[in-house]
Structures are given as structure tokens and as C-alpha cells.
Length: 94
Image (cartoon, rainbow, N blue to C red; front, side, top):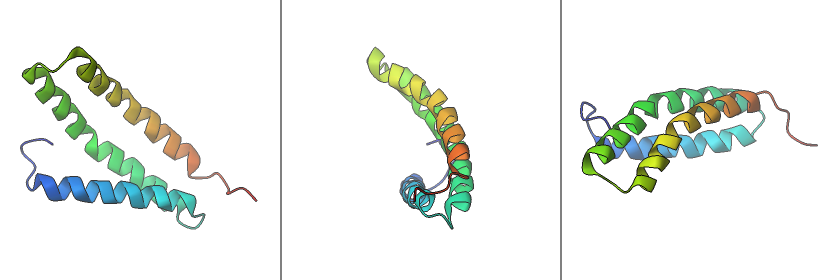
């Protein structure tokens, strides 16, 4: 979490709740489009926190494999955004 943001714990908790609700929203046809847009905005909003986590871990000298996972998480955000965008118009199975 970037240092300039206040109330880290409530922000982390609320983003986690928003992710869960957004995932549930993707399962419901009526809310799928709005949930997808909300999740995409959330994925964009948490990206700076992912960069900050990588920066802090690099300074602490974490094991190479942990740093590698943090690096892989950054492009994963783009994949998740793309996937969410694609899912927004998929009709549910009959």
C-alpha cells in the first residue's frame, strides 16, 4: 500500500470485499456488466499498491522467488482486466 494513502487496513479490507462482491456480480446476468466495470476499475486502482509491494520487498532483500512472484503479478493485472472485459458480455449457460 503506498505510504501516501491513509487507513491502510480499511482500504485493504474494503478492496477485498469489493473483489469478492465483484466476482459474485460476474455470476449474475443482471449485474455482470456493472460488476465487470467495477472490477476493472478496482484492478487499475490497486496496481500502484502492487508496485509499492514490489518496491518494498526489493528493499528488504526477499528471496528471489518471492520477488519473481511479485513481478509476475504486475502483468497478471492486465490479463485479469482483459478477462473481465471479455466476461462482461458472455451470456450464462442454459
